[in-house]
Image (cartoon, each protein chain N blue to C red):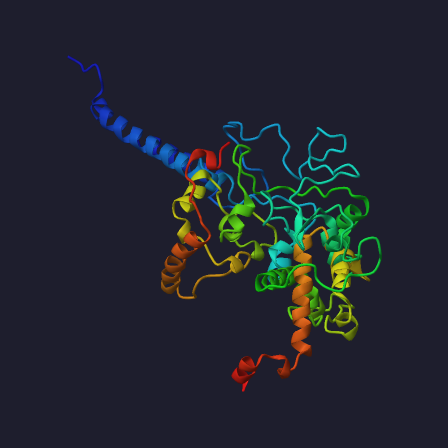
Amino acid sequence: MRYFIITLGILILGVVLIAGRRGDLSRNRPMQIFPDMKRQAKLRPQTANGFFPNGFSSQLPPEGTIAQEQPLTVGGRAVYSFEDAPVNTGRQTGSTNFIALNPFPITGGFLARGEREFNIYCAPCHGRTGEGTGITKKIGAMAVVANLHDKRIVEFTDGEIFHVISQGKGVMQGYASQIAVPDRWAITGYLRALQLSRLGSVDDLAPELRAKLQ
Amino acid sequence: MSAIFPKWTNKLPLMIIIGGTLTAGAVTAGVWYYFTPKYFRVGYQPIQPVAFSHATHAGQLGMDCRYCHSTVEKSWFSNIPSSSTCMNCHNQVLKDDPRLALVRESAATGKPIPWVQIHRVPDFVYFNHSVHVNRGISCVECHGRVDQMEEVYHAKSLSMSFCLDCHNDPASKVRPADKITDLGWTPSEDPNEAAKRQEAFGKKYVHDFRIESMNNCSACHR
């Protein structure tokens, strides 16, 4: 009996020593004891897959492909993403002139959306206030970050701001792949609000709001 | 008359009972402790091709998760960022650093970086990121404090019972929509107060976000 208990003890100790505890860090892939169709021969996004010659599961669409999509509604008209429309390019149709005003109506919800997107995608460099004092500037990682309150940028039309967000400018790369079109316009609207916060005067306020300030 | 069995065999039934119980107990405990995703999956930390630190980017620099994982609110899967996203900053920051050689090569040639997937539910589980993220479930609930991880590891079990814990009681996990990517957020510093507030707004959000806690099989298994 004594030998049995000692053997059992050594066995348990051995298992614990080899197998470790729950949550121990390990470089090895989790074991699958019962496969149970957990891994199936199907395409999963962004994985290697031998089905296509280039080995990607997420294929780039062939050139000229038109996405199946829900069109944007701008000014009561449906606009698809392949169209040369001001909402997609920031330019007047068939010209290189930038449009002056945001094609979307400026509402509270639209600006709130813009604020959120601005704080995600723009604030790391330009800072939450747009002064160009984001974290990359603070740690000295980037030499040049534009101050969005510069006269030069304030004088941009809405279309030009949209174009810079989409295509980039100077060392800034475009954000067209990360931010959807309506969200880029929302950022444009929110940037206008940020700029106005520096340019406005008390006289611009409605009388009842002005009274509150004093 | 000499005994057929020696005297010690009188104790044999007792020994069998004790030995059997001990063995069964040890085996049960071992299976209970080890044969679960809490052991298999938690702590999986593969070596990644590029030594990207979430602790630096999401923690120290305070970048939002969605800067890189930009499809998480719109798509069922959360994307691994394209290397051009890395180059948004790294065309200037550490632009000649050897640690980023693979990223630069990938951005220039389109050759993918072979990142190793860590969190992967079985192929018959249809988890949708956008549905959760847009309804007040934070990244941290399934992925842990990624903003504190130098190298990402599997922090939660992601077993079926893990999913059901929340699906049975979503009010205990929902949070304000603007705190989704704020991984360290709690309703209050004081745990008692935090629990009280969670209970109060949890019910409200479950109603406001129109959360249906789907417990039928086909919600996830198709």
